[in-house]
Length: 114
Image (tube, rainbow, N blue to C red; front, side, top):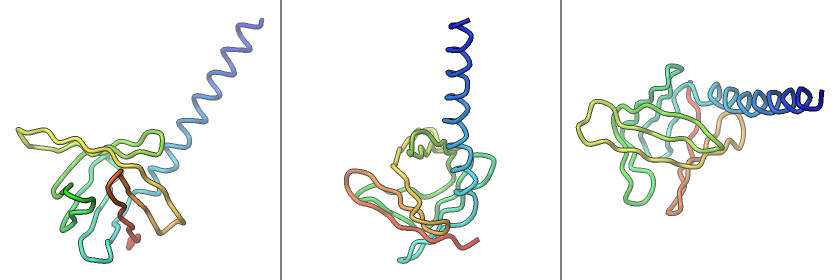
């Protein structure tokens, strides 16, 4: 009986953790603008298009990527390139229309436009 109760608790905790990621994914979907120009458009099929942004220090992300969310980090993986690029950034929402992406060098504040 104790094993069943423990298993039930573990399952509930897993779903609660996944629920946070799923709700954050819904917040990401749409086009986000950087005040100095450029946009990031997140789609609900786990793809993203980044144009005109070289956001974080020497890091430059432009083009099409896939993305995944985990533990308040977003990981971008390049698409259609023979040279794989994987970049993980911390994220936070200060409200429903403001997204902050950051690494140990700098941060980028984006405003949702659609």
